[in-house]
Image 1 (cartoon, rainbow, N blue to C red):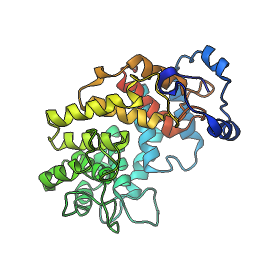
Image 2 (tube, rainbow, N blue to C red):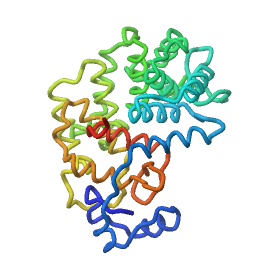
Image 3 (cartoon, rainbow, N blue to C red):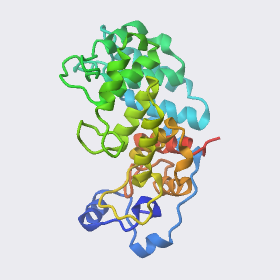
Image 4 (cartoon, rainbow, N blue to C red):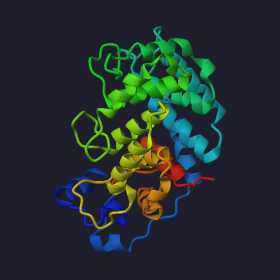
Length: 327
C-alpha cells in the first residue's frame, strides 16, 4: 500500500495489516517504505482502457444495472463517449430488466421482485445515455410512487415493510429523473428525512444512529431535490462533513478502520450539493485518491491494500470529477 497522509496517518494496523497482506495481491509496504513512496501519476487514458477492456472481456456485460451505470458514467466522464456496441448492450439490458409493473430488477430474468435500487441505477444510466425512450417512464413512476409510505418514506420494494433514508433517496431521486415529483407528498418526505438528523447535524442510516457519509449525502441530495435544503440544514451538514476524515482537514487523527473511496465520493458529492467544495483540503483528498490508483491496469482500488474493480474505479472517477481533475 502506498501511504497517503490523508486519513491514514497513525492508522492502527494490528491484525488488519496481516489479513489484508495475506488476502490481496496489492501488498502493503513497510512503514519506512510507505513514507518514501510517491503516488504514481494517474493516467486517465489507462483508466478508460481498463473499463473498456472489462466491458469487452465480460460475456454477460454489463452483468448488473449498477455496473451498467458505473461503466456509462465513467466512460462518458473520461472520454465523452461510449463504444456503440457497449451502449447497445446496456440499453437492451436495461429494457430487459423492466418488469410489467414498471420497476426494474437487477438483471434480466432475476427471480426477485423489482426494487428501488435497481430502478434508480437503470434510470441514472439512461440519463447518461440520453435514452429514456428505451423504457416505459410512466409505469416506472407508478411503480416508485406505489412504494411511498404514510410517514413519508419509501420502501425498497413491494414486499418490504420498512423504509430508510437510503431507500427514500433512491425512490425520490428516481422520481426526479422521471419528472414525476408531483405525485409525491413532499412535506411528509422532508419531515421523514429530517427525522434521521443526528445531534452533530449529519444524518444517520437509521433513526437515532450516528451520522455517516453515505446517509448524509443521501439526505442532503434528496432534500435538495425537494427544495428543502435551507441555510440551517446546509450549515449543519457542512459542519458535520468537515469533521469527518474525508474532508482532508484532520491529517493527524488516529483511526482504527481503513478509509474507502466510496465514502470519499459520498462526501465530495455532498459538499457539491451544499455548494461548499471550497471547505475541503483538495490537495490531501487528491493525494488519497492517487494512492488508490493501480498503475498496472489503470483502475482504482476501494481502499488501501486492495486491487482495482469497476465499482471502485467509478468512485475514483467520480471523485476526480468533483475535484475538477477531468478535462
